[in-house]
Length: 594
Ligand SMILES: Cc1cc2nc3c(=O)[nH]c(=O)nc-3n(C[C@H](O)[C@H](O)[C@H](O)COP(=O)(O)OP(=O)(O)OC[C@H]3O[C@@H](n4cnc5c(N)ncnc54)[C@H](O)[C@@H]3O)c2cc1C
Ligand SMILES: *[C@@H]1O[C@H](CO)[C@@H](O)[C@H](O)[C@H]1NC(C)=O
Ligand SMILES: *[C@@H]1O[C@H](CO)[C@@H](O)[C@H](O)[C@H]1NC(C)=O
Ligand SMILES: *[C@@H]1O[C@H](CO)[C@@H](O)[C@H](O)[C@H]1NC(C)=O
Ligand SMILES: *[C@@H]1O[C@H](CO)[C@@H](O)[C@H](O)[C@H]1NC(C)=O
View (spheres, helix red, strand yellow):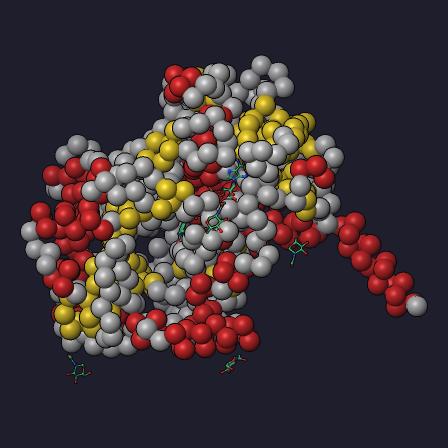
């Protein structure tokens, strides 16, 4: 009796402490100060930080599913990274046929889940160089976006943790570059001979291929040990590290799942502090108003789509799909940048993860061990442990038209070392043998494409055109990256390790052959940015100002990867987290909540 009473009191206390998770907009009856559109990487951070002030209330509206439902193993088991693509966790977008890729249309995954793309991404944690943030400050005219000013937010977001097996990671990262935040990151638990050879190459050729103790320290060049968004053997997502803890402990934040915001609504001329929501094209629409402001965090595809559906965008284009213009902002959906990825492969004389991936029994055993006690191969990032960021030589003709990188410590291209045969899309894999691959990425592309509407129906996918390889710089840089990858493994450290390049890699000798390979096999690294880019408030172009407020609108802000001016010289999730941390403070400052 007494125990039952106590439990009832405790569970009541628990209920009254936490927020509510709705799955149907009809259930939402309260009024809120803030509405966050999209409970993804950025949206979860913003909503959680705002909820620290108990005097305000927040509703997060997420089109996708819960992160802790039946598919949560796919999200949280590190080995399963990548397998969320094409499942209920994915929007399943497709690009337009890419002229720079022999007309191929690419699958274009985006997270359709609380936590957004942080639930389905490859977990690489790479802040990029200080130059990247300093460029953000220059472009926006706000020193608050500089690396030095953002350091407190970087530390507030992230915390470095040891790998589960506590292998020695001395000399593999710089503890001073890391913080105390909820997002757990760390080095990978299992490293292989090829990873040691990468480091040996930096010892043998320190000028050409310098070692970098910590690529997240603000110096973004050189070769070093990869950090991932994995902590205590589990993927860190913005849902697990921000949103869910807030929902569990605070009564002023609610989450509405399975509900898409289909339109931003103006409650007064150009004052867009209300939203229309529906669960599918045929379902009832509901309208919710934020007494303070609406924050759009729907990502680089969803954000421009939603703005355009609401009449905020290129007026002429909107007229073509029957949408009346509210604010003529030509850059909404414009300037889309993305990064490509392409692999080269070598057969090697040593153990890599090839044998593991070739053996379904070993793979299943790893998952079983992980289920038992969260140890083993499944408990860490599956394939990449070492990575390098490089610049073109300063006298490269590719730079004659100007340098698209953010600054002298920002990379033009990347080499990532993969401990298996990582096939390009459509490339056939060999059977048997031990393999490694090098992935090349153009970090600072100059190609810019667009997101545009094909319909005024919010449930029809927008047209996505990243315009891959439509500039000479991009193809020239990719060719250089392929040559560097081949030169890297031709250094003496690799003599006894490399058996032979895979036939397709061996066949690459002339620039023309390399270019053909690039256009045949490159795909998206899934890093879209810049479709609602930041600029000074005095600038004609751009979509948001230095405070991330939509130009020409009131009570409407954008916080996600779409505001980035360009592709980043690291990987975008870290920068998205960092921007969201500062954005939350900007919003608090606006409303006197700091
Ligand atoms: C497969 C894959 C691998 C990647 N690998 C890496 C990596 O290893 N490292 C790295 O740094 N980056 C990686 N990225 C990129 C990185 O994950 C993203 O850049 C980052 O997560 C984007 O954050 P965001 O907040 O802008 O958008 P998201 O995290 O995508 O959040 C947008 C959210 O808004 C929701 N939404 C959209 N429209 C609406 C609407 N109208 N109404 C309601 N909700 C809506 C979406 O469902 C989603 O939850 C990868 C991405 C993918 C897809
Ligand atoms: C994406 O495709 C998968 C597989 O067909 C499907 O289960 C899922 O519902 C799709 N996602 C969306 C948002 O429709
Ligand atoms: C999912 O997370 C929410 C918020 O933390 C929690 O209320 C709910 O019980 C969780 N569901 C499951 C199935 O664990
Ligand atoms: C692999 O390395 C071993 C020594 O470590 C050597 O004996 C063997 O000949 C090598 N095999 C090949 C194919 O190079
Ligand atoms: C976890 O389980 C595996 C497989 O049963 C076992 O070998 C290992 O010792 C366990 N590790 C810990 C830390 O319990």
